[in-house]
Image (cartoon, rainbow, N blue to C red; front, side, top):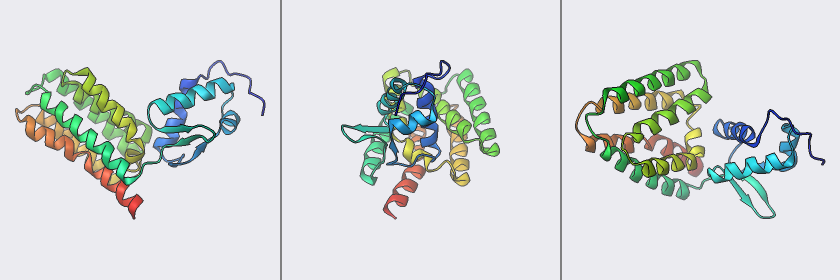
Length: 218
């Protein structure tokens, strides 16, 4: 297949965002193949941009590229999920323990605004908004720990767990539970109990992990 004529308004980052959204919301299932020819049929760009997009998705951990096999959407085994979440629990607990309490009012106000947006997106069924505000909430919340390397690790493992988290996106009950836990996390920033806050942050991870593992093992 010949390369397409490049669209100057479409770059590899735009392609990566579109594919990431397909993966997050289940339009591309774990294990689905991402061939260059099929992507060229979809996106009016050159092969170079398609390859760059796949490299970018591989770097954030949601696509796997293998020699002579091409690219596929990352599929996680139950054991891989347990290992990823073991790291998430460690780093998020530690970040919560480092947050100075009580937190500044400005941080609480900003988190409340993100929380409001998150709730609106849940009500409207706008899953892209739900996903984006969820990630914004966690990065802003854990950013209060003051350790940028710890926050970068949290963000990295949020990406690794995308297939797991995406599995809960279509479950309204799961979204409502997560939303209510966010509010409790915000409320606890006004207190002084880092240990209780850190345990809540660990507990917050469990429903999506259990749901994914039960689905795969069942």
